Length: 568
Image (cartoon, rainbow, N blue to C red):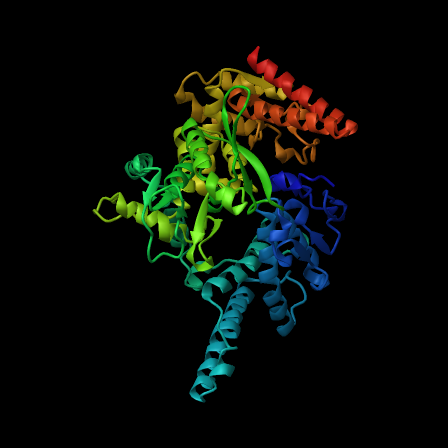
């Protein structure tokens, strides 16, 4: 089984045959369609972070009369959205559907019509809202408060999602003419969301507005950066009334000398977009230069991977110098505590012991006071309300929207599970993202391809001489190719033709796939990968791991060849 199934787009991993005839012959690299338990955890990068119902889909206790229809719907949805989302919808939706069918003696869905669907909605409301409310009110009148607590009505939003599972199942079955599907389509007037009193459009707008509101306006962002640059390295005095006191007593210094850690943390967050927990967990010596004097930061991320994992990200010179400076300043803390951290705190609650810098209270104890001290206000003259994660949204938005950095590069930078997760931060539609990806290739000095598919792509891109051609170019590309962003370029395989023949390989560039195209914009990624491989080969040779060193050497030679094609 491939270790890279989690990197696949849903449309690649799950494909139903067009005629839907021989479903039991479907097999992917994790499970077979005919199985009554589907383990989708191989398609999740960090399965340990998900509950059982989000990574295992069970169909064994679903009545035979509808089991295949439910399985077909789920497999179809797996090819369209995140696997864990399909598993969650199945888990939430099937229990109540099966209970309804059992109470009303329904064996199949072939005769399920609009009237029965409305009956199902009424049953949901009566069973999970009206009746619990009635029982709760009765018990409260009798003074039985403890007994009343067990009768908690479900929300209309939850039941909307529950009924939506069945509605989508019936719609897919009818529209795609699956075996055992209803004879007629479910037609609701008014809509399902209106029936449940859920304004889905408004919810989507609020969610989008909330996310977009996390991007710090340029004037505010510039003032924050300017203030962080100007504040001194040290601050004096005791921060009374706070949970943590960032102080360090020195016998050679007069009074209490404290490093202004907030200064450095803000600069690092603003120019890297790292989470506050990732910044405060940085270690001494975490920055370095490569052979071309480019600056890198080694950080550890544990939220989006199976186990805590180190990774290197590019950083600007200003951040490199700031980290070098705070590394030298915090050396006394490391000497006294024995810890290798970059940032520290002195806890008054622990006998003034030196502890790692706290991230939980960062917003309240450090970031907000920083905004107040520097009088950073919004358009109304009020202190600008900011949270640590706003830097992450702002950094991502700037890189993709202003500097045209490929989304795949940002996904790698953040250590995200998927580019869909990264898109939450860049606030851009898939259509605009595709346009920017194409624009990146039109602006590249050199584009590399390994076969006819790639050469055709280069030919199409070369036709876009001016920006006015971009829209037409995108339409032409989407008709001819399946453009999917990758950390080292793009994949042009059209997944509408079925599974990629190279499914599960280590890397497209490594095997010289004819559907892989890259440009000099990805050159830093290749060069850094080569540096990592070179150090790993040296380490393996030193440890006597001859076979491992030879394997890495083959990979290293291939990537050096690609670098040579760019620099020739």
